[in-house]
Image 1 (cartoon, rainbow, N blue to C red):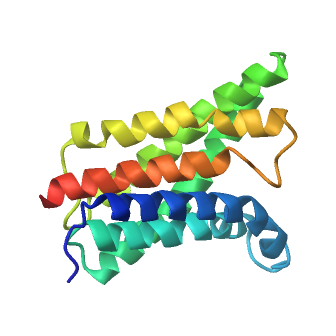
Image 2: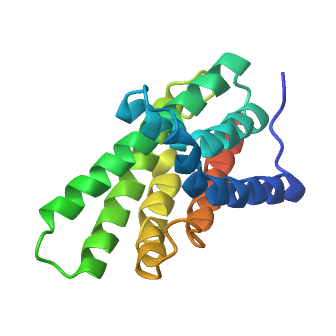
Length: 185
């Protein structure tokens, strides 16, 4: 069993992992679109695979969770991605008539909040997950506040190369690691 790693180099590795997964995630649909027989929501969940792999390693490294729990956290991350995308699409649809930038910001806020909330809810039920809601607020706020970065990527026409999405994934992964390390300490 791995023990919590609170060193600065560990946090740097997680941040770099977040940046790498954030670069790979927008490119993943190019591969996933080749799976023509798979259902749409399953294909959408597969887009989150790079971030799910990072979450697996964060949960495994920064908490006393067993391997099966880290796998569950990765699956929860993929489910959270689907929920976040659906929330963002819903909010974008509800804001019809608003300026495109405002719709993108609102969609980013809601998607970031819903995605991080689903992750927090799922990971909180793992054996070594914090049970108190207050422990998860930093990750929820980070997810919501950094969510509009996707809107900025979209406004700049960077949907496929996504310069700012890696920042969101790195920030959420760092928050997750700090929450899990606090629980383990």
